[in-house]
Image (cartoon, rainbow, N blue to C red; front, side, top):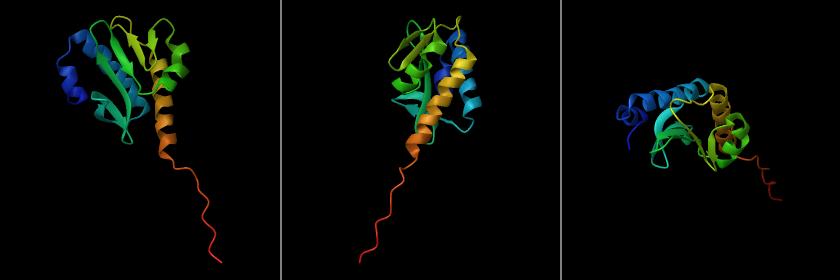
Length: 128
């Protein structure tokens, strides 16, 4: 699969609009995220790490933040939607709440930022 734009071009209008909206909300949180791939899916990428992917499946649209911990942390914000270990599912006619998507993306960004920071190490004492 190619970029997000390539992927969206082949979708039905309702699915495309729903998916574009999730990406638009994500870009308001992380404006410097770029189109790329995550686990072979078109995704937004931040600091070289997969931030979020949104894909049409046969029976739903899936949101993949590439972190089961993030999905677990935001689960209460997505009450009424189908959640699994690393996935949030919705229908185009029942969109996700923007505030919940913002929180999801903020948590994933924070996770990526934290992983990018090397732990502080103590310099070895000089010999002698």
